[in-house]
Image: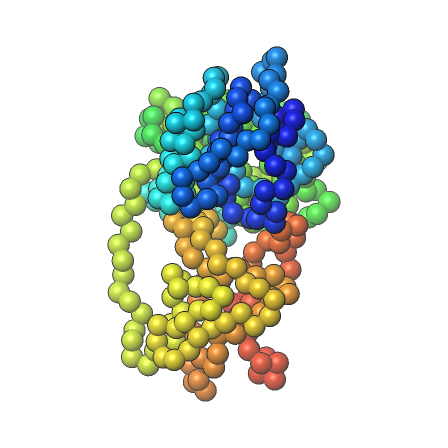
Length: 369
């Protein structure tokens, strides 16, 4: 920790990607983290220096020492926490890592490929900024779109090439209810890609990067107004601002019924998600998948069509994984897989599930499809 001076050692845990639970204050020589397995001890070694004004909190602004990052929770106080209070807060945050911190959706939060506005995009409509267009999103939610100038296939929906605000007002919602949302802003032409400003319910303007990837570019939780509406406002920074879709799902307990298990007759191998890892044992047969080149990583997260956290393996183009001889001469196969993003934001998209070169067999992904 550096509060105008190093408060703790600056080389405590090098090359660690774990979630860091950390509490500190600039009003006392006091800091605790959640790295140890027992009761945390004070890791502050030097008195901090106080500020004379209120200052902002940033990620990747300020000093030019940028990071690829994840932030899960932030709490601030306007006073010095006691040692007991810090220890209690560390304990709470460690519990949250253990118990999970998720706002469940009572409906499926659709991906862009499951539902977009391409039916409008392919119409290539021009000069529609003075019109209000009613569209239907996934889960049957309707929205009024206004201020958009065109529809285009390469945006899979609506675009605006002017500086004025364009809007999407989702209506027919339950007043005061919470809704999860994901905004998709796909642009298939690289020369028109770039940033846009987005606000929710007339709040602060945040930024979203529009590109050819179909993952959500802007996501969060919003409360429906007394009229049962959520108002999204868009404004271009790059030449175009585009809207491919908005996924909406009401927050609440999920009631997803478990269907029957896959048919057991003739089942040859079953690599269950919950058992995924660098070594991945099949629940059927005597097969054990394993990382066969570089490293693969066990991940647990929601998103990309998964409403709740799921377990999976993730690797780069330098990784390799071998499931074993699990494809008999006559076979059937069912799977869940996806392209992932590299740590630099890039993505190589060739084959994922495949076999020997002399068989030229693939299942699912090929050449970015």
